[in-house]
Image (tube, rainbow, N blue to C red):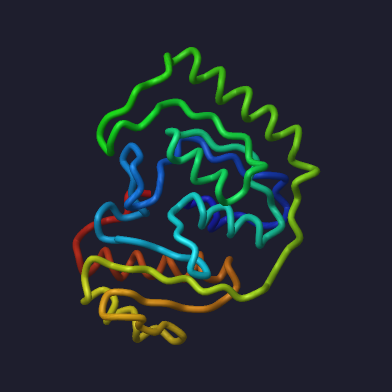
Length: 193
């Protein structure tokens, strides 16, 4: 979620519209930021992708994620991170490249209702701001990416393709942006978002 880069505690809530499940999940166009280059990600050893990172980053800043729409796998992923988030599944994954779609008018109505309910709940869901450190680990397809990222202060190798770093979650989110720029320069694969 690129919006987390400009997010701060002044926001009332975050709504995630049109999301997909993390890399490796059975979801429509499932990936984590960079298509196939990122094989897996963890926050404190908990598997995550863009949904989990967005939720954890917003929560650390004291901003609740209140709504998410996407396929059923994305909605399930969000509910695993925070069951209080109102989700609106607009399609049901059959595999990574096919789904059973809800009719467009029904899908729009579900998103609008989820957004309205999420906004209504937002004041009760505001999490406390936290600076507590967490550990981000990313497994890359390429050992070259991991080796180059290891030169960043604080970044260590778990194995030849997996890097990890410990910081407060908002700092991890910013640092991950640097990870993607390094990976893109080495693999010629740009982030999807």
